[in-house]
Image 1 (cartoon, rainbow, N blue to C red):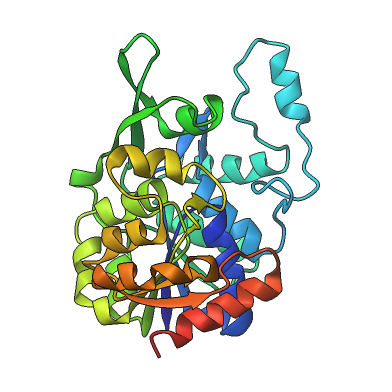
Image 2 (image 1 turned 90 degrees about the vertical axis):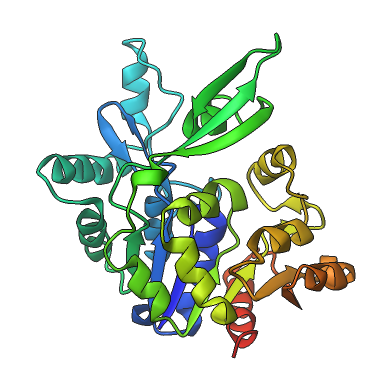
Length: 312
């Protein structure tokens, strides 16, 4: 059995490669929920949906999120009423959010609702929200006049396009959250635990912030392998650099190694970072060099094989 910590598009791509080289039913993905938010009365779970749609082969590859062939007639209609529509929801994607919102309102926990959504998409891979409890990334930014303001993650990432300078990042609800059903067991019972190439701060960070998760990983450190989302000093996609640097994390595979060193024994880094192997290993993490830029499904599958082989 394999367990992966996942959040964002990079994780979804990696998981699609992983299930191409192993039995999808042998994989459990523990997914970040701190990006979740409510728009137009609907509960949105961006990372859970990205993983679901990608594993189902239904994702919008060019856009990087949502469903292929999506339309936005509902959002366009809402514009008539002056409703803020900066967070765009596709017409078919809305069906997922309607189902989730109604099921949660009826008393089902997020883990149960997620399992039902995954089954409806025909997934054999098990998707586990890191927690059923409220968990929300909050990003404190500095305005031009020097004021500090705390934003919901989607406000900073989507509405402000990650442009406001970051001062701090926190995870509201983390202190009182408990790991979702099966989360700790999936880590403890896995042959290998993979930290997907996800944003270290806002995708992996919230997972680690749930009490008990980081400790469970530390106990399995020899079997934990990470894949760096940073290549040659820059993220492949997304604003990881705008978050890591202000928080004192070097924007490099070395910075990722240092951040993960207490729970991760091996880090897969890109061939363009081969010159930094010694620095990664100075952090106490074994470095494995591979092609980590997943430009197609073949490379994603090859990366998954090499990642698994690195802790064989």
